[in-house]
Amino acid sequence: MADHPLAKAARELNAYAEKHGLKATIEHCDLKFEDVTYLAEQRALRALYAKTGINLNPNYSMTLQMTTQQVFDLAHLTAAYMDSLMIGWRAKEIADEEKAADRPRDTDK
Image 1: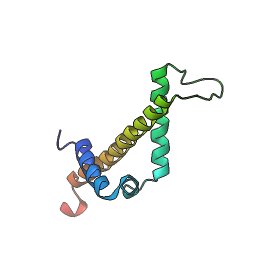
Image 2 (image 1 turned 90 degrees about the vertical axis):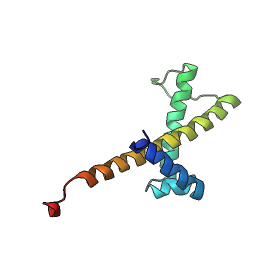
Image 3 (image 1 turned 120 degrees about the horizontal axis):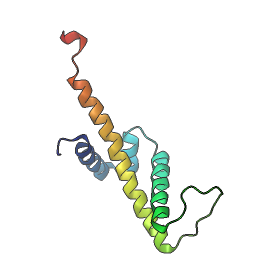
């Protein structure tokens, strides 16, 4: 598993984030901080809704009143989803780079 793209991505991103911070790490991957935050927050809200049994596909607009604990949970879930989104994104790039490195080049014929 240590050589799997997910493991490589996690190690690489952790090291970069420790040195440069989360926002710089996201931008280093050519992504926008606001976009990653939005996606992660939407996934976190979906997880929080599912946990509380709220209909995830209502036919109407709804407003959710959250408890202090739910707001706390949302922040933690958002951070976890940001981490997983970034690892998945970078792992795909690593897998593509490894696949490209294994392909014979036209000049290698």
